Length: 244
Image 1 (cartoon, rainbow, N blue to C red):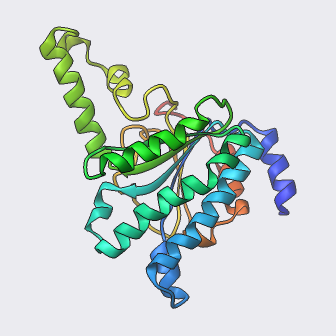
Image 2: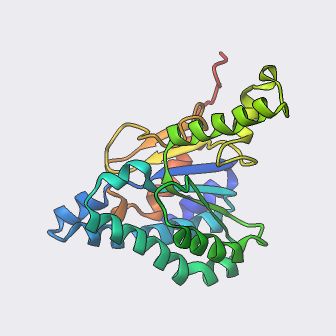
C-alpha cells in the first residue's frame, strides 16, 4: 500500500494515545554493512527524525523512544561516550525545528551515572519546547524499568515515613504517579525492531496492557511505512484488557 494512502487510512481510525518504541538493531545494521558500530547509531538518528515527523503529521499525542538504557553502560567506553555525545548533539541540532513543529520533548530516566552538566544541558535545551502542546516526545535516557520502580517505591516510602501518606493509601494509581511517566497515558502500542521478542526492561509497569508489535527490520531500515503498518495492525486488533 502507498505511504500516502496508508497514512490517510490510519488517520481515519482511532489512533493510539501513546506509542513506545525499542529502537533495536543499530549495531547489527553497521555489522551487516561492514561499518563501525557508531555508524549504526548515526544512521539510527535519521530514522528517529522520520518517525517523529510522521507522528506529528498523523496527530499522535505521545511517542516514547528507548534511547539509552541503564544496561548500556556495560558497552565499551568508546561506544558509550559516542552515544551520549550523539544524543546531546542531536538535541542541540534538532531542538529549534522541534519547537517550530509544536513538539514537546522530555527526557525520562535516572540521574545516576550522568554528570550534572550533562543533565543540566538536556533539561535546559528541552525546556525550550515545554510551552508547546503537540506531539509529546519522550526520550528514555539512562532508563531502566526496574530502576524506575525502585525509585518510585523509595519516594513513596519517604512519604509514608514522614506521615504524608499511609501505607494503606498505596495503590496502582499512586505508584503510577511516582513514575517517570507520571501524568502521561500508558502506551497502547509497543514496537520493537530487529527481530528480538522481549521488553528489555522498558516501561515494564506501563506496558501491562500494551499491544506488542515486533518486526525483524533493523532500526536504521525502519521506515514511516513500517510505523504506519504497526499502527494499522493495532487499529485492527480487538483489545479486551482481560475481559471476554
